[in-house]
Image (cartoon, rainbow, N blue to C red; front, side, top):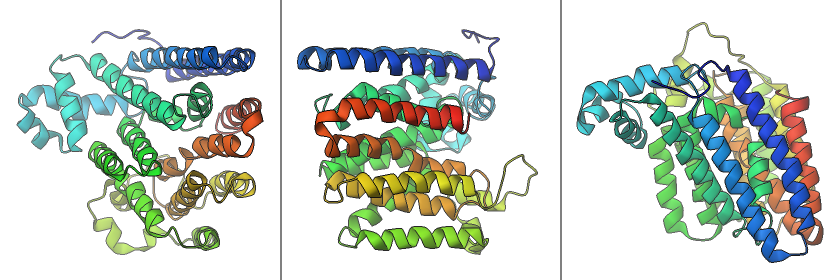
Length: 369
């Protein structure tokens, strides 16, 4: 197997990605501000800069060595090699014992017997699908800069874990974002299709899908009830109660709940996480204070954010709880972006730029760096 930058370390890759990210934030903001009054050129350059960023990240992530990312070598030994040895797709689906769409992807790329090709295809699917979502969510730049939203999503502190490590989660999340877009557009048929694709990519997506359904079924419930449940979940988690307290969940077939049975000695912090509670609560405060609670998109995303967060809090006493936190963290850039567009339409580019810099700084400089 041949890789570009074979001798690079994970820290080297992350440093390179951060350098490219901050360059695009500063350069992109400057270019877009200069073109603010020229709508056609603004739209063209906004998309051009975004495409160039997506291409760069796809190449960097997709050509990494097998030593980059804790789970990358696991994907090679547990999925890619067995797929090569299995021969047929039918046999691979039986041998791999993983989510069906991911198994198909592994088998198809295993035909080349080149693990680097598998990594590149995964990176291509992940980042190009995210690109499609961002373009749709911004109405192809007409509702606001596609570049700034993509950079904001990429400024989330969990993004490097998704890109380099937990790629099955990453694939399911980008399809989930497309499902959310279609649901917000009242195109429920496509919304259901992408929710199914998300689940078939990684079964843990069943959790956010259930939360989306709950939000849709409780649209007439006052928001204060959601906030009350949010505070209640913090209280329960703080005194040691959560999903780990429900015995039958450990016997379920859901992969995340099977972690309840894990007894191995691993270096993972388990227990109440005040830092994550403060982090999520800080953004929830901003959402409640500045959003238009009559706006369909805002209220849907806020409710989903609250439910995702409270489930995350009740998961603190189980290993890998941060993977559940992803479902709330991925909503943060969407809410920040949409609230700015709705509340400050005439100043959205200026304020989005400031918020983007703040969001990058808090995630990659002040915290979780």
